[in-house]
Length: 237
Image (tube, rainbow, N blue to C red; front, side, top):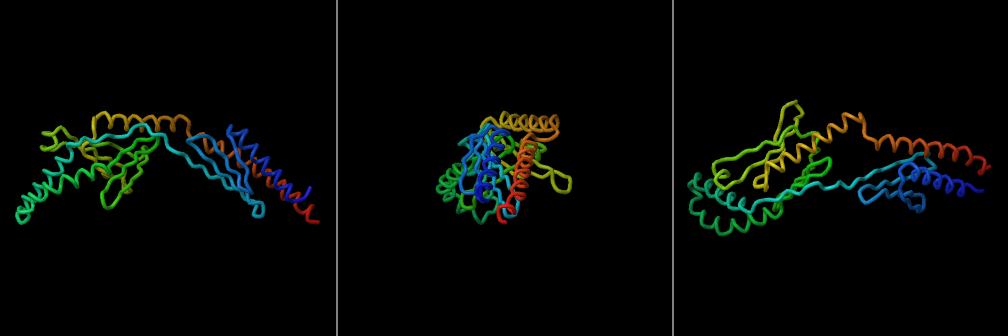
């Protein structure tokens, strides 16, 4: 058996180890061991025999728990808020009619570009018409979801939801604010409940199960690579 065959057998052994440990389907292709463990999780394992190293990369597609819906009346709120600002500035009062004409189209497009998605571990917020902003907020970092309702919003039945996280200095900071989420209170309670479930699960287990699984797999692959190291000199001589 030559050195290439030894490496091939070692990769097959590593492949079988991953299959036994994770119960996954795998595909071997030219030194790259690609392991697919389902529609929501992908593991890629690369073994470099020359450097005697093995890298396991785990990518998880988050499961969506809920997508926030936005009330179309928020466009009217933005229009009125913009008109009030122009009224206060005085010099922009002549522009108010143009704002109502073109502002409705602008606010409508802005509303179409807003999304707020709750996954098992994060809250993903996307917004912006010209400059797109996307923020992925870990649920465990969220300290509170504050509700605010000014006079105009109260009149229109709208609420503002602010995501508060623990700041670097130990204080709290509002990371993002969203206006017009349908059933704002219910959405807020859903996010906080998922955050509490996540924190409770971590406190009970002490550590996620995935690292221990990957640790066992890496140990098995490490032992395989050591066997390759012992056999290669013999084949070279």
